[in-house]
Image 1 (cartoon, one colour):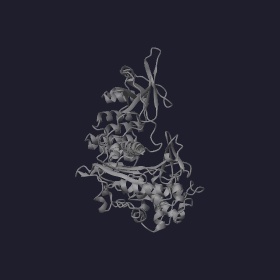
Image 2 (spheres, rainbow, N blue to C red; image 1 turned 45 degrees about the vertical axis):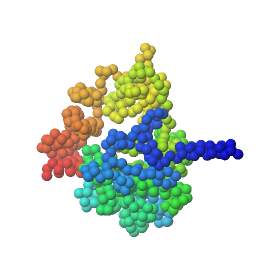
Image 3 (cartoon, helix red, strand yellow; image 1 turned 60 degrees about the horizontal axis):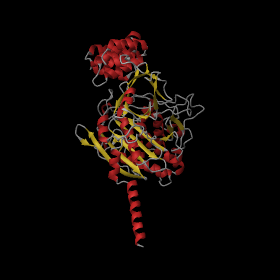
Image 4 (cartoon, rainbow, N blue to C red; image 1 turned 30 degrees about the vertical axis):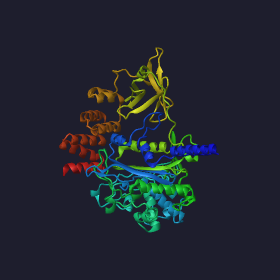
Length: 604
């Protein structure tokens, strides 16, 4: 009996220990996420990155996270500053601009009306529009636009995105003015300009049509309808579509930060509510994700089982690669290309507004997910992905991450053989350098990519599930590298064989110009390069001037070349020359509002 009792106690302790390992305490799970940020492909025994260090790396002032586990918010935590001037910290009730996650919420609002039989998915949307009608044309005669097409980005509707307005640009346009492209709206009219039902074509304009249908059918403002039927009803007190933000939300709102040259240093207003106007917190959006997951399992009244199944069913293919991405109704559907398990399907949406980034993702069947919101745009996009991967690793999401790289040990002198420069395109150089027991790749002046040996002369890349093979000649010398299935062999470059962009980086501008002249670049390529040089930190104005001089050789009267000359002159403090360049550019493009604003600012 004593032996049996000891066995039971021992067995019980083993089970308890195993269970404790499987279900870590909340604080330990948080710490694991914070220290498990990773590149696209996991690497065995490669230490994860720290969240605070990656925020510093991407220059992100503040962010907030809510993690979903077993259909509940497992934890929510905030990091950094909501306002770097006042030093106001981010809290879990700090509200951020959610960008295009607005579309996911708009889809829920529309599908609620489908559930109530006030809208239908497959009838012409004009049947429900009373305050405004979508103009008929040759594209809609045989294929009427439906709510299904609008929500799945298959309607062939114009206006892929909206750029927002600064607060001092009030009064802001109404939705009817935006749809008609009338002042004070600065966008073109929303129209059908390609064949409906043919393909995925992302459209913010399509969601404004859906918004107008919701408003017409409910006789309520979009702000009031979504508050009463989603935010208030489902416990989302820090979420609103109101634009501009009401005072009570302004007190909770993060500032916005961007390194884009066009950004005017303040949070923008988005009167295009359904497309981009949502403000929220990760915890509030996580509650919505959970209700969608519960609806899919028949456990929530947010949407009926019939409608949520339609929402989270592929309507049209978006991209095919390592991940297959399809579009549902308001939600993107994501799974690995080799996934055969329903538990490996995820629904998601990303949001990008001026100075903000947001990510929301949930598993279709397993009750997992994460919402991440931050007050920085641009390159900070990678930080959100790194956090999402960390959550997926710690919470063991089914079939989400790529298979891990299993590096082998190679002698230092063998790794050093691979270090060097390889030419991928006329002005694109791939560089490898040795670091510890792996290689670091950079493409031109891009971010570092970690590469690990998995066999002699073979490496695996951490930024995508690719393999590279170094090729040798008869003398056993490395002569090139080939990314299997993607590129032909990239030849190894001699140390003194520099491409034009490398010459530019060394300040050898005349030699670089000679190289670019041979490449016969078009005006868009040249002006983009000039723009990039002007807006680097620190700016490289001599290099930009060299590029524009080259553009003048073939495109001297181009309005875009003249506009970039205006930008350069302005940065050089040559106001008279900048004014003349902008005026000349406007003669060819008199409707360019950005040029009008630049010229107005110079001539006040």
